[in-house]
Amino acid sequence: MTPAPKLPDHLPDLPGFRYVSKFSGGAMGEAHLYHSTIPGQADLVLKVIRQQALHSGDSLVRARFLREIETLKALDHPNVVRFFGHGEHAGAPYFTMEYCDGGDLNEYMRDRPALPLAEARAIILPVLAALRYLATAPVTAVDRDGGTRPEVGVVHRDLKPANILFGGTVAARLVKVSDCGLAKAFRAAGWSRITDRSQVGGTPEYMCRQQYHDYLEAEPEVDVWSAAAVLYFLLTKSPPRDFGRGNRLTIIETQPVVPIRARRPDVPAQVAAVVDTCLDDTDELRFKTAEEFEAEIERAFTDSGVI
Image (cartoon, rainbow, N blue to C red; front, side):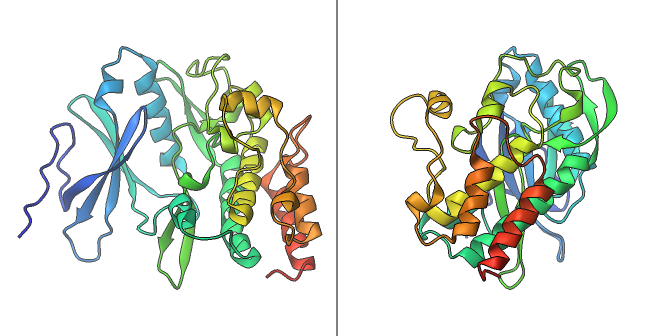
């Protein structure tokens, strides 16, 4: 029999759960899987600040993590990963959330060709439903000193295939937006003093110029652009811009979006027109809300016989 994995010292022992393994990690946080030992109880993911980040001397590491906790605590939508609880262990705050055993959209696409239009539609519409909810969700804004205030509306700022998960069953797959590590109450921009005006955050392949230019003041329209970029990826297996050699942030500034039919000519003209319009970030973004983009792309799909 294979021995049970040893629980790392920096992680808590959760009653009713058995530690399995670490399965992802970034610069600031890492995620660990816990298996339920109680029949009928779901497995969960525990996210904790990385020890190196916690002891880096950066006073904002904890503030950013606590902001993520406060954001997730307030959210309740079927297309957003569920928050379970939070605590602190060995000086490090952590929180727990639902485990989506279907993996993420990046993994799903790895060994597949570009998706049929109907499947891409079935994936992107729940993502847009999540963005509609986030843009008006009541949340608690957190400042760098731990102060709080009620706010309405969240901007995600890092929507991409790796942050779109599959839960549910094969027969009833649920699409869920995850990872609110860069999310914030957008109406509190500048108040929290957590983000400096010179900072840039997000993933360049799924980031519009407006977010690159003003990450601090980013509003939900940048998430709508990212959703269109995800749809573009599903239909072409490529991000909207050509990212070859060179600085990826410079490419955002200097390279135009490639029209989607230049990469996949069989995309219906109406669908292509909506996607290309949404991704045009040379000046002001055309679609300000997920509702606007959802209405136009759904009309284009329907008129093109894609259901």
